[in-house]
Each structure stands twice: as C-alpha cells, then as structure tokens.
Length: 173
Image (cartoon, rainbow, N blue to C red; front, side, top):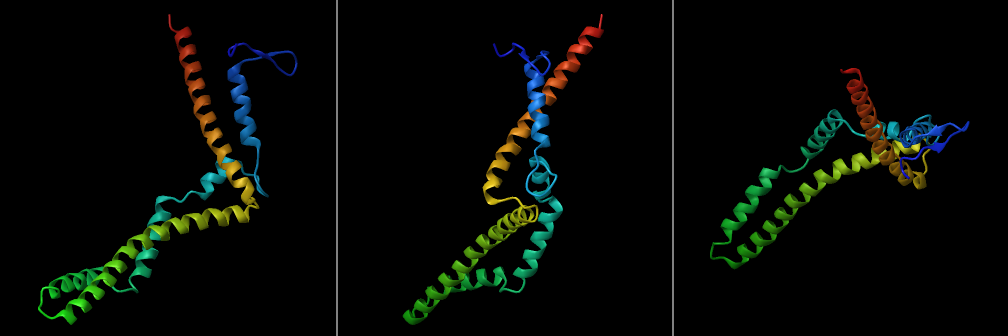
C-alpha cells in the first residue's frame, strides 16, 4: 500500500519517492519572518562557527584577565589549608572563611565560562530571529521544520544514490 502510486495533478501517478521530493521542495519554499530564507538557511545563519567560538573564548579571557587570577585563588586555598594546622583557633576560623570564599570563587568561574558562551550563543540566535522578524511562537515550529528538512535531505540523497546504482546496474552487461 505504501508503494502504490497516488494520482497526481493531471491523473499521472505519483510515486512515494516523488511525494518525498515534493515535500522536500515545499519545505525549501517556505520562508520565515520578513526574510526570503527557509528554515535550513536560517539555522545555518544562526550557527556559530569555530572562528566565532575562538573569538568568544578570547573575549572571555580578556574579561577574565581583569579579575583575580585563578592560580592566586588556588594558592590562597592551599595556604588556608596549611594555616588550619597551626594551634591558633582564631586563625583557623579566618582561614576556613577565606578558604571557602576562594573555593567558591573558583567554582563560580567555571560556571561563568560556560554561561558566557551559552549566553552569547542564545543572544546571537535571538538577535538574528528578531532582525528577521521571526516571532517567538514560530521558533519552535521552525526548529521542527529544520529537523524535517534535514531528514528529507538525507532521504532524497539516499534515493538519488539508489537510483544512480540502479542505472549503473542496468548499463552493465
């Protein structure tokens, strides 16, 4: 039943592979927002390249250089651990509080680095969608359409490969 041809526009039978190709072409013709771009083209536009990620990391390092160096904080934490073995209780209390504060600062920095890149990525995508006039409600629909178009791309590619193999087999004696 799935391989049965359906009737097309002028009574011509349409094969399932033709239907998939038609769906694929239709997906490519749907544009989003105020642009003439389809979902795949917008996704390519919003993706960050390796160069972008390198630039973002460089910007983060430049910002990070204005803060106390992480190595200094690690040395302070180790010094606090060493001070803990001294016989003075008031010094132990101070060392514990300073050590915990420095350790928390080190931990937060790891989160800041990841959050900086994630935030940049989200802001980049949101900015492009805003410029192209794509509404927030359309973004999830567009993401679903992108996934469908990628699947259609793979299916059409496989059908073309299979068709090429079949034609090669027919031409061989």
